[in-house]
View: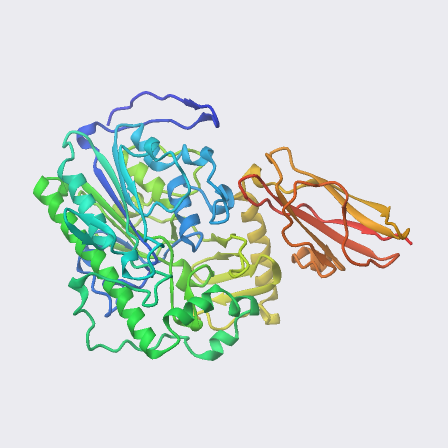
Length: 571
C-alpha cells in the first residue's frame, strides 16, 4: 500500500470540503459493483428462508460472502434513503425528502461516487437515481438516470426502453447497461458501477400494479401464497387513526384487498425480484469472461422494506421492521471466509464501506461505519447497540415518525403527536404485535428511550435545521378594541431563508412537548412573515399558554421546532 498525497479541494458553495486521500496501488484496488433494489424487503430472498423468492444468484453471493441478517435503512422511503446512501449521513442531517426541491450541494460534494471519481476510480451509474440533483457528471464518468414512466398507466411504465429494435423491461435494460459497462472496462483502471433497479416496485398508476419479464411467467404458477402474518383486521384496527387513514392503507386497496389481487401482487413482486436475480447472473458471467471476477466486490441492498399485507397495509414509510429491514450482501472474492452477521447495519454504512474497499478514507462528517472488518474478521465485534430510525417527510397521508431500534427493543413515536408511542420487546415479540408503551411496568424503559432518542436527534441534526429563535408575543388590539396575541420570531443564524411557517399553541406544557396544538395549530402557512402573526381564535384572560414555531426554507426543507415559549393572556 502506498500513501499518496493528502490535500483539500475547495468548492465555492461549501468552502473547504473533504478530499483526504489514502489510496492503494491501482493494480491492487478492486472493482466495486453496488446493486440497489427498490422495495425489496429483508426476507424477500431465498437465502433468508423464503420459499417463494427465486434468487439463486443472490443466494450464492450470500452463501460465499457476508450476509447481514439485521440490515436496516435509517429512513424507510426511497428518496431519503438513497440520499443517505449517496452522502453517508442520516435524513436528520441532509434533510432531503420528496417535499424538497433539491438536496444540499454541501452533502453531494461528499458523495461516495464523487470522492471515488476524484481518486482514480472510473464511475458509472444506471437506473433510478431517486434524488433531485442535476450535477451527476461530477459523480460519474458515464451514467443514465431513469425510472418507471408515469405517463403510461399500464405495463409500458416498465416497458418503454429499447435495446436495438426491442422494447425491454427496465430490469433487462439496466442489466444490459451493466454488461456493456463491464465489457469495455479498462483492466488497468478500477471501476465503481452503481446500479439501481426500479423493480420490484409496483407501478402505482396501473391497474395491475406489477409487471414482470416473460421469463418469469411460469414462476409460481399454480402456487397459492398464504395470507400474511398479522394480516387480520385486529392488527389494522390497533393502528393509530392517522395510519389507518393514510397512504399505506390506500395502497393496500390497490394490491391486496381481495384474494385475487393479493396472489397477483405477491407473485408479481417475487417474479420481478427473480428478474433482477437473472441480470445479476449475467453480470457475473461478464465479469468472469472479462477476467475481472476475482477482483470485483459486489454489494446488494434494498432501498427500504415493504409491507406485503401485514397489518392490512402496503407501502413502507412506517417504522415497523417490515418497512425498515432490507437485504444486504457483501461478496468479496478475495475473502474466503463466508459468514452470517446479525450486526445492526445501516444504509449509511454503505458509502463508508465502499470507500474502505477502495482504500480511501471517509469524510469525518459521515455517520456510518465500514462493514469490511465484519467481512474479513469472523470474530469482529461490531460495536453498535442502538440506531436512529425516522421518516421525516411532512405529507398529510403519511404521518412522520421517529424512533430507536436495538437488537431486543423498538421504540417510536409520531412526530406530530408524540403522545402516540409504540414500544416492542423484539426478543419475545418479533412481529411487533404487543405495544408495551401503555404498560406501567415499562414506564422506566419508555422514558429511557425517549431521552436517548432526543439526544440522538440532536447528535444527527445539522446546523441548517436549527429552529427559530428570539420568540416573543405582543398584545395588539383589533378594530373592536379586543386584545389579540401576536407571535414573532427570527430564523436562526444558520437558516438561509423562510418561505413557510407553522405555529403550535397549547393549553398545557405536556401538549406543547408532544407537538399537540390543542389551542391553535396554524398548519403550514406559505409566507415569509415572521413578525406579529396574529392568533386565530379566542384566548382566555389570565391563562398561561405555550407555543413554538418551525419554518421551511426556500428549498422547502423543514427546520426543527423552536424552544417552547409561554405567555399569560392579559385581560
